[in-house]
Every structure is written in C-alpha cells, then in structure tokens.
Length: 143
Ligand code: AKG
Image 1 (tube, rainbow, N blue to C red):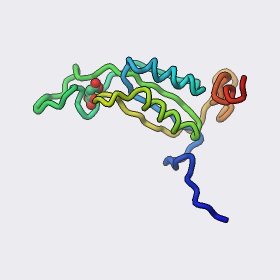
Image 2: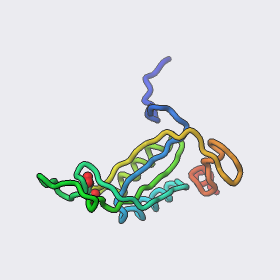
Image 3: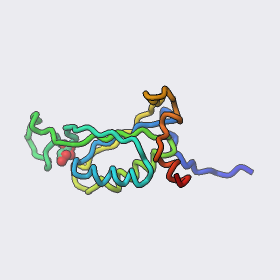
Image 4: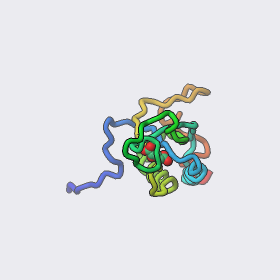
C-alpha cells in the first residue's frame, strides 16, 4: 500500500547531510536564543559581532530621500550553528520563537548546505565530527 507521506524533513536544495543555520539577530536577544538552543540539546554555536542593514538601509523608519551612509550599519550578532538536516527546522523555529519582536530589525536566517564537518582534535568527519558529548543524542539517552 502506498500512502501519501508528508516528509518530516523539507527538501532543501541543494541536498546535504548537514546545514549551517546562519542568523543575523538583535544582540540583546542572543542570551535568550542561546539558552533555548542549549535546552534543546544543541551544542556548537558560534557568535560574532556584526554590523549590518537590511531593506530599511539601517533606519528605523523609511524616510523618503534619506541616503545610505556608513553610520547606518546597526550592531547585530551573527549566530552560526551547523546541524544535521533533521534538526534544521527545530533550530529555525526556536530562533524565531526567541528572537522575534515583530518590529523592523529582527534580522534574518540563512540556510547553507555544509559539505562535511571535520573535528580538528581527532580528524573525525561527518556524523562523528558533528556529534558532541552533552548534545541532543546524549540528552535523549539520559547521559
Ligand atoms: C534595516 O536596515 O533593514 C533595518 O531593519 C533597520 C532596523 C534595525 O535593524 O534595527
């Protein structure tokens, strides 16, 4: 019997085992986002101070005739998390839940396919390199 199946994992293009979730967020929301990710068992989060602007050109309100200037770059934090494909949607949903204010300037999330993950200490690759002690699999197995 062939049943219609709703894929639990969306068909990302291009397909990959791992993806980088790259989020440009409000700095003051970062503690909220990172502690929520930690609670879900996500380990391995990188943050960098960033400065940027989006469609508004860095201004809080659209102003006719206002020109872009370097001063318009607004402080943001770039958060980068590499996860398995099956974790992507949970991570994105959690970031939105914790980072969203509904106001202009909440930021953006990019999803980037990752060819491989290599742990520097051991040379492990792929699933072995991505997995971290204290991560989601350890939490669910009660370690
Ligand atoms: C933009 O430049 O598109 C903005 O969203 C500016 C507002 C902000 O980032 O606080």
